[in-house]
Length: 456
Image (cartoon, rainbow, N blue to C red; front, side, top):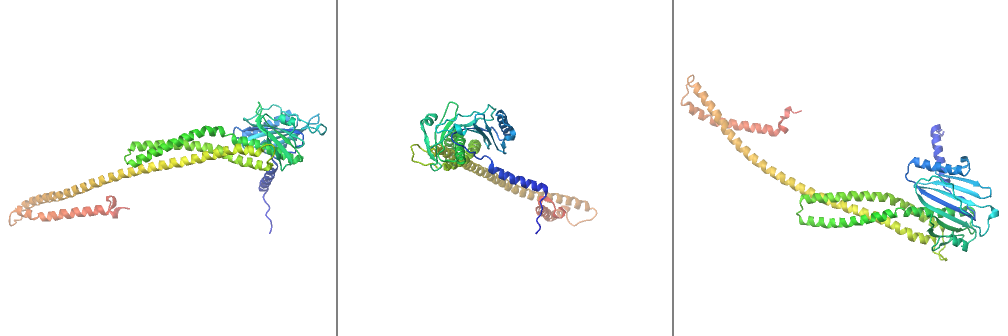
């Protein structure tokens, strides 16, 4: 079978799709890290999802590269990530990685000293990027000190911020990581990572997992102040709806609810339902993202493969114990809000049903009254019809009397003309009765009073 050759334009579109799929695999990958080194990570929330904001973030990364004295052409560039390296005159190697995510973007710098300067107790000083205009507010600021060996020495312990130390063996005991989960006066947290037997590639992946854990648990806890504020209002709404339910049930049981009260209940229920739906959808948008971040957060914690039972509580135990309750509270908030929405909807439907029944009852009463009036009108109409027969006969009899009197000189009739006129009364009654029945039959047999044969 001869294979169909695609058109050039279609071939280009398909090739771009294939390249985009492969490029996605290589974006935002971890870079190798050697010990000793110093890693600094900063993430910023995007104020919106507009392309103009993303373009501004990309331009800022170009500005940073220029201030470092690096040609922009040296950037290993992707659609949502970029990286660059620079070796200073003292032999220090600087790697800068920029990443763009859905809700945030980040800068990660890794400063690696030359081989001759590396030692077991070496402290690598952090590198500070040149000042550049940032877009959005800072989400997380992290400083990771990567040291060789497996122990947390006295100097490394002193470098951690004050507080209880958490951590221990990670990656099945091949490395160690510690932190106090405290921040300094500039809001920066710190880790000490002992490389152990990890190669640069796996050590780089470990650093990336720690950075992701920090970033995502900050994103998870970001809606917590808003949740604490809104949950108070939700609790008040629950109390108010509970009171509504009791009052409405009592009113409905009494069967003496006035229409004004029913209208007032419907206004209250509709207003609360609109407010609750607005609150639920706003919080659902924020909290649903937290669910996605929580799944990534747990996946990264599992990747650490920590060994419990050491001198310190593990990072996973500490973080799960603090972050999981927040997620349960978020989900509970949505469940409670949905339950309240269903309850308000049911109450509103019940009140609308009551109003509809009352309206139907009023309509039935109105129809009964109309039927009674129609029966009275029918009775009156029959009475009028009987009188009209008499009246019509009376006039016809009088008319015949005039005729007989006029014919008497011309055509002598035996007897009195008045007697002849009286003898025509049954005839006129029968004729009037027949005409009335004929008209009624004609009207009732044609809808709208239109004769069948003439309606087309």
